[in-house]
Length: 131
Image 1 (cartoon, rainbow, N blue to C red):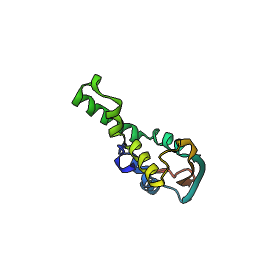
Image 2: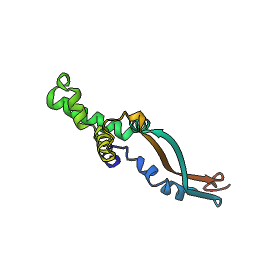
Image 3: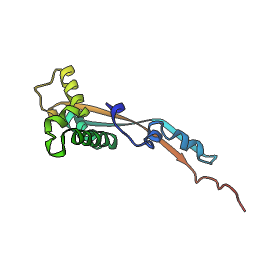
């Protein structure tokens, strides 16, 4: 699903853990740690709500709704049409089918969510030239 989202090109910096930006830091005392993990307990509904905050998901859905409006007219786009292009709804249905939980409420499905993170620490970068 992530690959289908429409993220801004600058998102690549996050996806590559700011490695290009790290290389530009002019400091003799810099470090990075790519092994940081944030663990959160929640449920499937929490995770779905989190994904709805992704700019890439929102951009994708906006584009799809605009395409539907162009094809059918803005006033003729139905909730069913929108649901048919909703990659998150498809993702949830796939999970429900694979986990055999189609009859359960999303908030009743517990999840342990682990976010891979990174940390960059540096002293104040050195100036380009000292006068």
